[in-house]
Amino acid sequence: MKYDTTSHSDFWLDNFDFDVEDDAELNEQSNLTASLIRLSMARRAIANFVSILTGKTIPVLFNDSGHNMTDGSVVYISSDIDETGDFDSAVGLALHEGSHVAFTDFRVVVDLWQNIPRELYNIAEPKGFTKQEVAEFVKIVLNIIEDRYIDNYVYTTAPGIS
Image: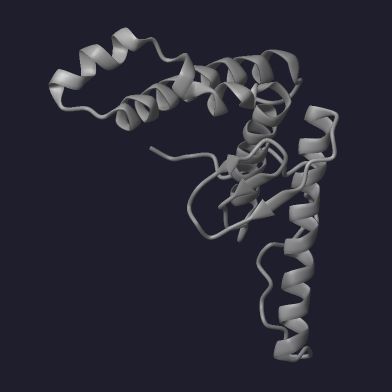
């Protein structure tokens, strides 16, 4: 099966070259500088998309941890942006996490331990699950449900995102 290699962002990244080839006329330092400038521009554009979606100025930081997440005030993305297709993925991840900032009630997570019905702990305890494991499981399930809600909301309210 052959896949379409064009990027969704090709129309506005028309002259944005992710592949910085060594130019015989430029030294290694100049090529590195050009590559870093392109990466910085891509990261700034991603942060701008998050601001447009959420209506807030939310910092978008890139990390090496392999986790895409938010703490409610900052979006953390673990994405390499080496080529145009990577850019589309990074935008999608950032928009999803930015939507959590806009729509998630983070107090629910803080108060989660207190809001889990005692009956759930009573069912899990004889099966060898600790209270912490039950709470972590409930947190994961809530996050999955909220992810579906957020994705649906963004797909239906933000034109051009799908």
